[in-house]
Amino acid sequence: MCSGVGILLGASRSEALPKADIIVHHAKVFTANPNKAWAQAVAIKGGKVMAVGTNVQMLGFINPCKTKLINAGGRTVVPGINDAHVHALATPGALLNYQNLGFIAQGQAGPELPEVLGMIAGATASLPPGTWLTVLVGEGINQDDSATRFALDTVSPDHPVWLQMWTGHGSFVNSKALETLGIDDDAPDPMGGHFERVEGTNILSGSVHEYAEHALRRRLLDTVPDAQLVASYKSFASAALARGITSIQDIPVGLTQARAIAVLEAANLPLRVRSICFPLSADESCSAQPAASMGHKIDASGVKWITDGTPVERRAFVGTPYQDAPNEMGEANFSAESLEDLLLPGLGGIAKKQQRLFHAVGDGAIGRVLDAVDATGGADSWSGRRVRIEHGDMLFDDNYDRLIDAGMVIVQNPLHFALPHVFSTRFVPSVRENIQPLGSLIQAGIPVAFGSDSFGAPPNPWLEIMLATMHPTRPEEAISVQEAVVAYTRTAAYAEFSDDIKGQIAPGYWADLAILSQDPFTAPPQALPGTTSVLTMVHGKVEFNPTGL
Image 1 (cartoon, rainbow, N blue to C red):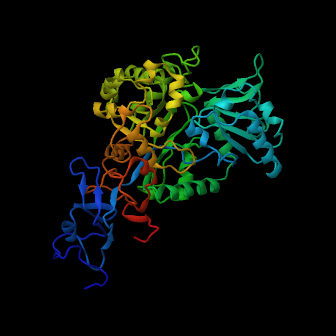
Image 2 (cartoon, helix red, strand yellow):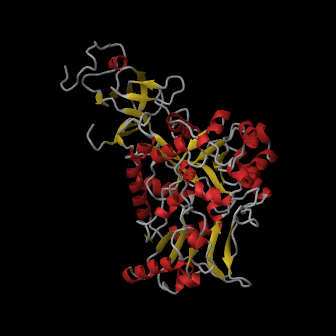
Image 3 (spheres, rainbow, N blue to C red):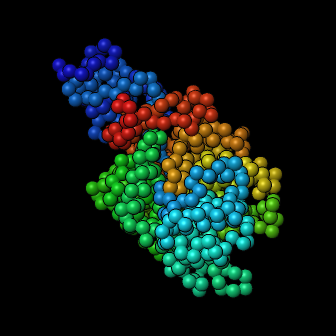
């Protein structure tokens, strides 16, 4: 008899049953399996779940000499969180206001230009020339016509400066940044974006939008060595595992697909990554694939396009003028015809590889995507292709049936629900009362997956889950913790065509799971963000176990 292996409840073992590599027992297991939502124990073999059931049932899978027993001590176990929309890489450079970003959550305008100039002046005095200086900004800069490259040049002639709207839509750069990135005043506007220019001239003002901004980010990341990107991915993965995240669907803005895959292969992360292609033109290749040896760890599939901005900077493309700017309705990045051209390749090849994902926030942008689906074959052509709308904040119920018929998926970011102050300012009551549906989408049968939309910073899915269960903008659209966990696991897997192998703790599925520090299903809502993992497992391998459980 091998030492160190006890029996779970004193029952005898069955020699006829196959034996497990690992058994997690005495747990409260939420399986996310709609046919069997709860269990006490899980048996794992070869990186996959072999059985789920009671402690007594799992006892029969013990090999006294080989099976590792993990006593969860009554803790809650969930399938590994799958962040369905994340940007793991941050803007390179020195972030000058990392400790002062409370304005985002508090609905404030953020730093005004004098404060920004002061931060930059202080940094130029202490950091070597050529160091990139980054400041996250909000309305205080976005609505200030004097926030130009020339104002930034007065305090930073030798340091490239990047002022980034915290939404990820809209940047302001100085002359040194344009020079460093090789952007001249005669640079043409790229597809889907534009450079603002000094009125009446061809001179760039330093304000860049949408695909002009993405093109600058591509050039900036081209100057960053792969080793630095590898380090960033590893740091991000470590933080993710601590929250129980075992999969991320990464949109590496600024990298070609080939480079993103090369960096991920070098990083060899301890979690799964779906790398979604983010091309800057319709003819940019999205064909790169990871080496077969990377197996289940890296998947390169899907193509992401951004069709509009967000309401924060009034660039979400809407059907009703903005309440606080009646002459503005946002801006569509692509014409209706161009959007059809970007969508159409999604009908060819393997559905997962060619899946189309569209950032569409405003009802005008969402309507344009739905029109493009109709114009390229409609439900008959698209129902199995799982076209995704990322965010979909202004999806209204008169379009629900169109999404259902076309088999589309909504990937929402509950952190957006924490901006009621923005929506109350931007939208008339008739629009505001219907914004950001959630519970009604699920009730209608529309698949809803969750992602953090985190940009470089470690995500906290449990904060997102809290917001989904509260929905500060529309409390009547709030959902249960169980529904929110499903959106972050089973439906997130569905959103990437992986629902046959992950997203559940069920026989035959990958053994990706997390043992949690508290029970999120009974914890007070305000305590949910404090949830962490005490053990995170990926493919049957313990990748995070700070307490030695």
